Image (cartoon, rainbow, N blue to C red; front, top):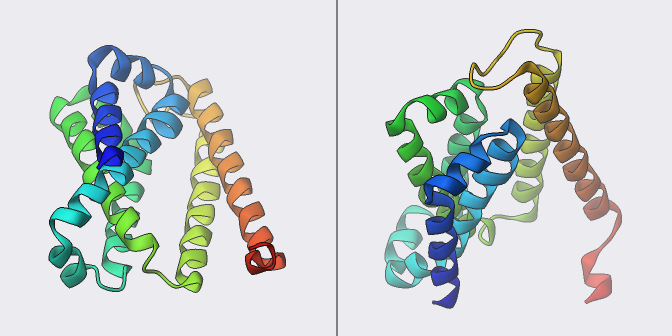
Length: 185
């Protein structure tokens, strides 16, 4: 239960207007810091929901695939430049961001990840690596503003952030392919 308290505390801190304004002031911090921290807060809060509603997760997310699909859909939506722009300009979309990332992405991710087979985990990582490469290429190559709230230079920096994340995911997949973790347990 301590974990859920830490997650709730992280969520509250991220929800404070000065903190939210600061994290949203730079595009890469908005996408690669605030949004993942909101998902992490949901991951920490998830244990509370798993204890309180075990039947719900067993019934609707028995093998982990539905929860992972929900996670992928929510994260894919928030990767769109238009969604980031609307989160800055429309208060209702900002509220949706603070609800969807922790509770519709973080909670299902924690419940689903342990239930997935290693092949499905690797396929999910490959999917995100491909999406990150695509989004990175889009943000780097676009000559026009994709987000009206940020400068073109900000979106180029975000694009390189996406490429860096994709490279890290590919390195992790190579590590998993060549190294057997059971050798070190």
